[in-house]
Length: 290
Picture 1 (cartoon, rainbow, N blue to C red):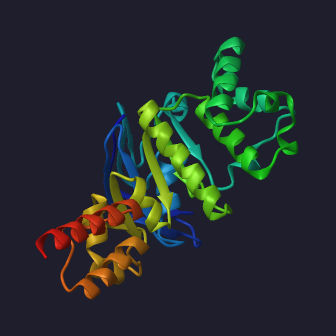
Picture 2: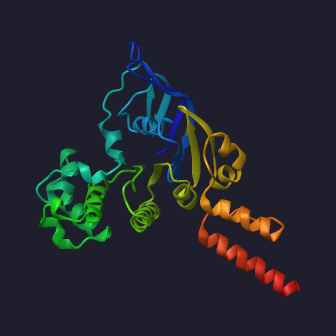
Picture 3: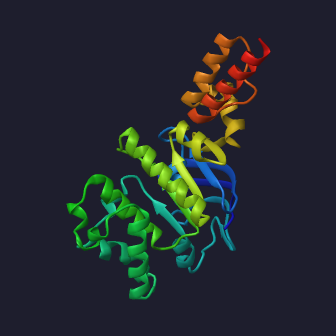
């Protein structure tokens, strides 16, 4: 399901003395099956933009095309339920959304609310618990008796049980330690590949965007100021500095290494693994030529 935003503008409390501009002239195309990262500082507009992706907010200017549905500023749209079913959002600290008395009931709640038969909702819940690396016995436990990491996985399972076509991740690793962040992000990438989701990652982490995304959009002061493939965006270090951002740590490390080496490496590396392999390749060439 493609998503296209054209000249999107949004103001909170529009027409009142408290009006606040949040988005201005945002153009963004998200291709079905892609992994899109949206990056920006707090207040850049990225979370407001996220809420337009399943019509939690509707634009005050511009047009959003979500699959076959068009949402235009100033026009009412009927029957948004199918779109909201197909676009799942994992908010920051998703474990705070848990509420039911057992893990099984919590995961089944969304599908049941959308008319999925109880036996199918239970099948989905049991399968997702297994896929997310949780023991089957957690299904009969209270979600509030689980560890923090387990609670987060249960909350994610509740979103995935809706079988969305688009998965929106709003700072999904907030509050986790480095190991926990990597585990959750690797899990989302695995699901992206296996299930063919369109994945939209809203983050301030340049490293996560560089490692996982196919396409990156930079938000600043409510505008999309730079977009493209990660190698294009993160290779443009001067523009990132202009927007108050730093390139991913691995890119900065590569630049320091190139200064010591005396010449640039042939490619820009976006992960530690890429850089290690490229340095090893260059070292091998140097040995063979000496």
